[in-house]
Length: 211
Image 1 (cartoon, rainbow, N blue to C red):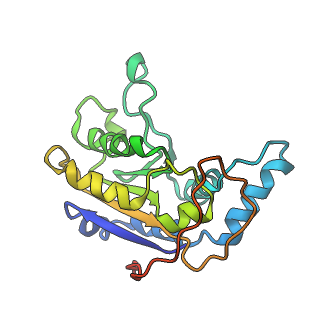
Image 2 (cartoon, rainbow, N blue to C red):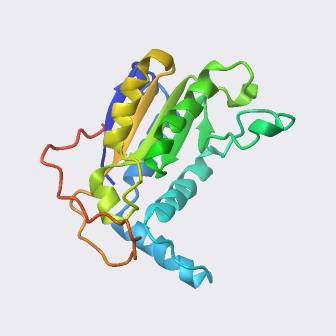
């Protein structure tokens, strides 16, 4: 899977000096169209109803690829005695890099960045779960359409706009990553939802690949 990036507060420069960033790049790039369809089809084999869109399968593929490299899944931000905040988690953490893989409602986009910011700036966060740089994965319009995600799902394009608006209150460096389905043939594997958006046309401007 190819992707493009939006660099916020020199996050790219920080990440390029971390071996763990290379693991994230490999994880994202190794996900193919066939992988997503295979995992999606496996839900019924497991006795589960297949999700409406492809985002659940993409999330599972990230977990499968990152866990063997020592990435901690769903690290809590606050101690267990903070009951009101016990549900605040990131998706992954390793070597002080916090990761969010977000295919949530557009209204949740600012909260994705807020979690990363708190993990980097609050001294109330569990010490081993503190970060100094964040990475946030979102679907581009092409992936959103190909995977028949709900039309309300927030995209890479929207996330970039939100992050720039939040700049005055966001000191943590964050690299926003837009996952793309450019060049992937359409599929009828996903049933979508009533608010499904038709697949977008391929981007007219080439993505900026990561070396």
